[in-house]
Image (cartoon, rainbow, N blue to C red; front, side):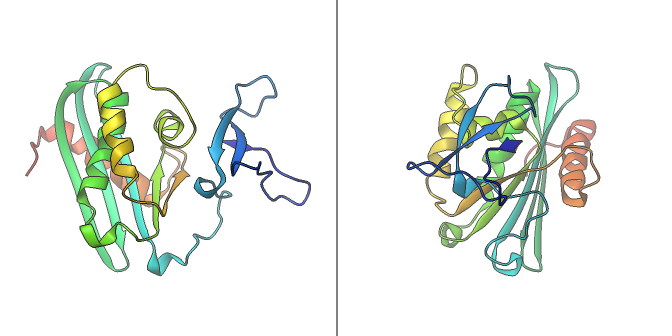
Length: 188
């Protein structure tokens, strides 16, 4: 993702707290508007420090499109680790990616609603729907349910990661999702 920045590298934020972003490094690419609080530079240190922030990685997988779907979630709460791998039936990759976000948010505890949360996702589609102003044309009910849940987490920020690029926890989320499909593991 590319964001409009000033010469000093800081984000160019408008009066509404939004930044122009593109998903391609091309001046002709469509411009979206993202909340500045949801953006961070690649490799930037989390704010606040990682030790106090809940770190989440999600991934959805689909064998065929449509086909069998699975979700993978890794939640890091300091030294505590929670993993979710779940077979979710037959559908599309986009449904799997969205459902992974839904499962991650559902796994957070009531007392974590005010916590700083960094949600890592490799789906430009999901981040566009949730933070970038994309309008849902399909899966509208699922998207609206996730958006309602997101409102319960005011300190959640989105972090776009490259899929299959060797990011260990993102690779683990992918392995949980694909493993759930292979094992057809139904929710606990």
